[in-house]
Amino acid sequence: MPRILTLQQIEGGKPGEVYYPIQIKEVPKPSPGPGELLVRISAAALNHRDLFIRRHQYPAISFTSPLFADGYGTVVEAGPNVTRKDLLHKPVLLTPMRGWESSPAGPEDARKFAVIGCSKITEAGTGQDYIVVPEDEVEPAPEHLSPGEGAALPLVGLTGWRALVTKSGAAFPGSNILVTGIGGGVALAVLQFAVAFGSNVYVSSSDPAKLEQAKALGAKGGINYRSETWEKELAALLPKDRPYLDAVIDGAGGKLVSKTVRLLKPGGVISQYGMTVSPKMDWVMQAVLANVELKGTTMGSKQEFKDMVAFVKEKKITPVISKTVKGLGNLDAINSLFQEMDEGKQFGKLVVEFDSETSSSKL
View 1 (cartoon, one colour):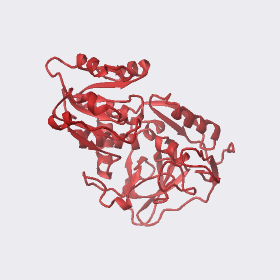
View 2: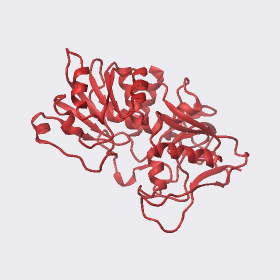
View 3: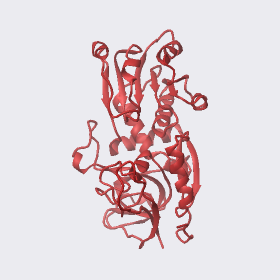
View 4: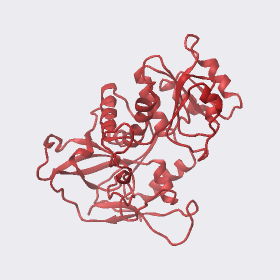
């Protein structure tokens, strides 16, 4: 029978202290209704939100809907009145969110917006053998991507695309962009997108090996953010004919503004998609005087997802995968991916390639 991967609810424990176990449950095979598609999922990928969910550090957690927001699958059945019948038997990428159509400002109704996977707002999630979705919640998968590579794209690709293209205004040839925390999925997506646009990309990490890996992907240079003078080291790397940053794409926060304000051009942009260092960040008067813009950004719209996937297809971009495990029911292996994410070891995405729903589960 088809399976879903869910959280097992346990009593007691505070957010940040609890760690919900994962479990496999057998469920009936769903059927598509009017305007819906049935997708057989063949690969899914982890995001940091999945780790936060297991620690109850994410809002509106569900213990009945499947984990994971990233998925690659094949359309196996179309319901009545479906207009995109050309998708039947074709591989697709699933949109990782619901409730945001096209507004560049943000979700049209924030109360209806949700990232899929273990959410009370939507039952959708990619940690299952089959999923029924409205026909406009998928995009044809770029032909050059394998199932695992396709599963590695949606959430980080969408988040990175919006942070770079919609928000920073720096996605053009010759621009200088700093991408912090290289090794994470969003940062790597931004690096790959910006390189494809022809930008000069500089990256930061505390791991010298990750800096070298980023250079192999097209980064012009890298700096260790643990250095007290990393902003001076970065300044020395910038081109002499354009010795400033057009934008910073950041998911860490901390002392970022005070460190980069002298490097950013007047009116330069800090595009902030996360704050892993601290939930607060200083805003200095020097940034005000330099007309620096700080722009918060998270996820993206269905239109941005469509544009991102088209760009990946055009430029033949392949998402970076750190590790792949086999089997939706292989709970030990999936738990090892969560551990790797928790320890910050990964360079790229952590992927689960599915087995047949008839395979035995390791409970």
